[in-house]
Image (tube, rainbow, N blue to C red; front, side, top):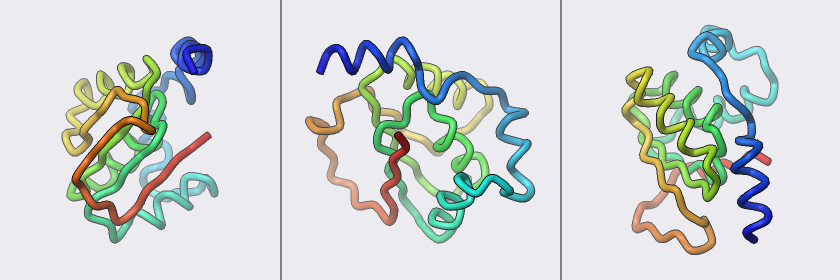
Length: 117
């Protein structure tokens, strides 16, 4: 398990991105992959992103839907970039948990659970 964590901490999947990258897709979600997540999230009130990595998808969705609460869980160091990105760009509707999802506990109920990778 440590080898997997080390791998993803080094890779920080899906990688670093900018606010311009989020804005590129914001008006009309033309990326078929992102559209799947976008369509599913539209009517949710609380979403869980399991294995969020560097947080592109959760930041993209949270930026588009400020009234939805997102919880993002990842055990790798990539989540540190995601958290900092949210802070730097005033995206306030994401709670980050740096933890092994298999050991992580919550009392929240979710309308949607997403995972990428």
